[in-house]
Length: 138
Image (cartoon, rainbow, N blue to C red; front, side):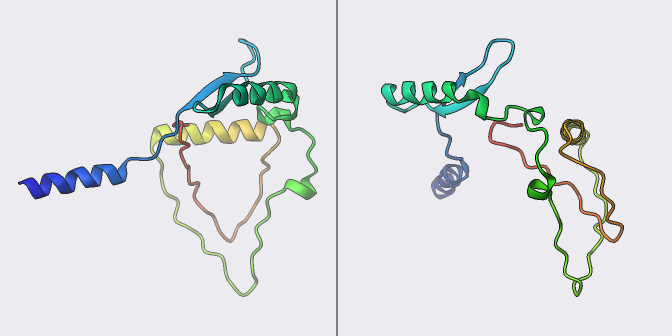
């Protein structure tokens, strides 16, 4: 029916995400890639000045976890502020898809090797890992 087709078209329009056209620029070398994404619709003079500015300060950015060693843990440590009157709840362990479990294990290993993560014991509660995919699929 015509009405159903119209509703389906409207639903497809609502579900589609806004995708901005970006341009990938490598600020490093072919061996040591340091890729950034900038809006493709920028004016050429603005784009050139932005890229030159980013190339000038390329050493300021952290391109991997190993680029940020020695941060003071008093500043960047993650703490869980628990109220004494609210007892923590232990979540039931949920299984993840094998491909997602592999990605989680890989990311945790990278962060642990770089010194970003440390083993902590919270015996009263456990929370499941919630992976959130980025726009580029990673």
